Image 1 (cartoon, rainbow, N blue to C red):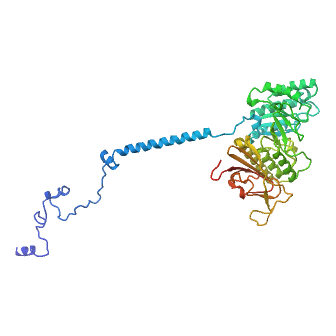
Image 2 (image 1 turned 45 degrees about the vertical axis):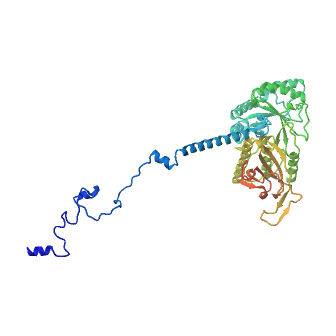
Image 3 (image 1 turned 90 degrees about the vertical axis):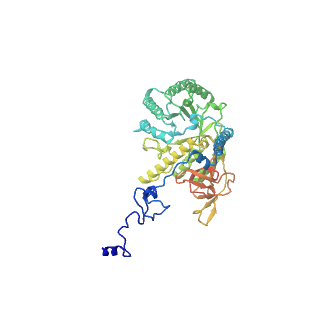
Length: 508
């Protein structure tokens, strides 16, 4: 017993009764409720520190607390007033914009007839060839997809016989033409029969026959006829009779029958009644048996650009013989001049290059031996150029019926490029750049033609009143894209460019 007592009182050792509640502990009732379940708790419990793993829960604010945080109920009225003011200002700006659009002056739009909006394609199918009219019928949907709206068919009748004879030996040809007219109407193309240099009108008896046969062709769906200004039919007496026949079949606006007169002389013989003729077809180049030089082409183009005859609606065709490079330039010119372009048969635009089509109609360009790859590339380029011009002319009012302004200005010639320091003025033998403007309202299209064989650069001070910035629409090589500035523009030899001008920082 003594050893036991001595062992219990030994310093440094915990007594046996250390676990009793009265020794170094307090009653559980004195502690917080979190530890009240235990009979006793250690004295050293940290106060004010959250327990590990405890999650703080946010309580939503009441309405009174939200109003107090927002500055009081008066702010609600202020916000309502601001929203109302915003919508009133928006409606006011909308009303002002509508008033500006309605009150702004607009150019007077003259409604165009179908022949004033269309593009003619002149063909001379060989009815005695292996394909003939049937081969042409197969290409009608393709011609329509290119943008052509009407065909002018020549060479369907013998010059020795009257084209108005619908019976006899030519009955087979008449049946083929009837089939062609039906297929053309199905493809959405109109057909104009070319009676140029045919004995259409003569004595009184033949005039009666002509009137009867005109009705026959008009009943078949022919949209009109073409004659030359040297034909006997080009007389006021005959044209009055023809106009009376046309009115019988012109019941609807899109079915009006027209008369096209091909101008072969320098000056068209005037008529007292100009309404007897709907379209006058003029050639840009004079007829010749040889290829025209660049200077001859430039002089002919400049003469037409400076002389405007808008009494009767014009239609433009090439006429003379030119090189292949200038052929693309003349196509751009035809498609951008005021009037209806009349494109002659071009083997580059032919889908099948059928041998039964008269290739002599293709502007008389020199034939050069090309490989199949080069030929295919040339054909794709020609189709892409015509499609681009056709679509631009169809959707742009400025190119369709906009005003025309000839722009004479100077140009400088570079022997190599703009980066070369050796730059000289254009030689006297080199034709200058030709340009004109097509405008409609605030939209301007600039057409530049470099007919010469040298590279030309525009003079920065050539037209200070026009915007210097623009965007390329198309070019003869189809390699001009994006925005541009006139002061940095260079034209390659035999290149034509169509540019849509706009003010700096905005597109028109």
